[in-house]
Length: 248
Image (cartoon, rainbow, N blue to C red):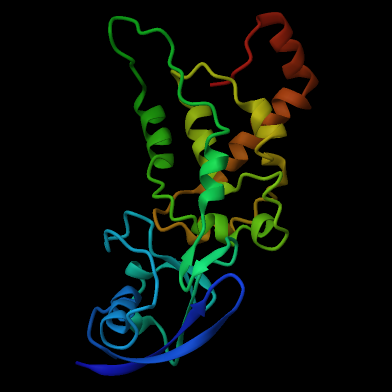
């Protein structure tokens, strides 16, 4: 069954922009990205947006739909009543229309030490299934940066100078909790990536399209490791006696 819907889409650049209304024809199963493509094809071929896979796996089509960070390709039109407002992510500079400059994220990524495995024994690295599952959850991230957009430390306070954001705390957790990694990244977690700035509101977990439990499984365990390293006197004595620094 076909009907009509009105999209109010942000048009402009980082200096000046406004919401422009477009009426589109809808059909069953249609998503917001379909409507944007229809506008580009039939009404305004200068409308800019990013997309790639249209399957919720590339993270390219991130936007704010009626004020909520979402993937346009995974957001059904029929979930909304009335006008649908489509805007670029608020946390990052606007290049044009729905396209953001997210290059800051890649600068942060370079600050995290890469995976450094233990010397192999018997030609293979063996892992318990529990460790496989834990690390695999973090590797599901598609870098849509919705969690970065919704994080109030970045969005409301613009503390990109001291806080890496939830996406990179997830990456840090995946490396730090890997049973075969030997690098120590806790000093960077504290002094460079700003883990302590997160106050675990779980807003990042709420918007994750891959259902990663960012707060519970990544950020809180990282905070616990920081407490053990820098604020727990018993753990400090244990490290002095054993010489071991990195927890499992």
